[in-house]
Image 1: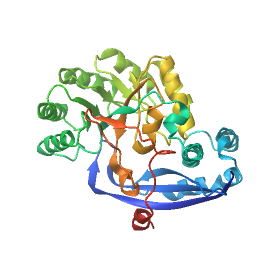
Image 2: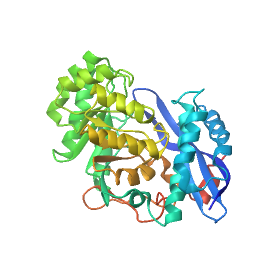
Image 3: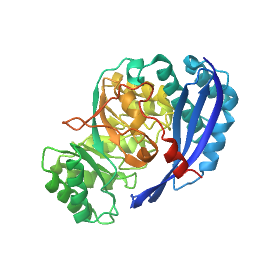
Length: 361
């Protein structure tokens, strides 16, 4: 079987309402969808995205520029494709938009490999888990009032989640504390609660706030300082009992290895597109395992689920519903708040042509 064509489509997914993090307001998730067509009729699917349609045309152009390296390829040689791309993008560098272009195609290649074998990617790799603990991440933003935070938390519980994440970053730390206290009161002591500062604090601020947050038993305190300050993250991790989670903004497994060497985080959370695709996501997972560090995922829930299922140190799947509207299938939870790994081939989730027409343009 050979790849005969790289096809791309752009879709714009508006959020139900604008949401506010400590970094910026988010109004839409805008995607480049990738389709790898073959002479056997199978099609591999993948995607990358940008927030608020920012520089999506640049990402799209990067994906298209790699077409000559994938057309004519045997899908089982996805490793050879990645090695060629790695050399080709050396001049641009192995971070940023060049890595996103690689990720777009490699995710589609792995989907195609799974479909060719008739196996879900998790089983193609050698699954460790049939279900992965998951947390609700699509709510409890800074734009929510305390009443709305409690209502959203109750809604997540009603949907079957047993873990959820809220955001921090109010100008007054007392307000952050009040918001966490309100959510903890709404969900009780047994539900896992995470808090994300979105990189907006200094090291002293993070340590002061982190110590005040410890009474709430957070599962983790996420990205308290700018992601490049790994020494600062390490200082915070050493000062607090609450685990520090980070890594979503690092590129490729080399970035994750640097964090591990510096002991920057207690929990690592690679992002599928910043890793450059599933190959480096899995490498990052194995590196973390060697350092006895658990792994969560960042975004891309439908694809990350199968990758986490193949990693013994998988801790949590981030359930972010931004991309749900373009998929035919939905992630299903068991009775304990775990995401069930599908037995469908490839990623186990497929794009809905009607949704693509609706959101395209």
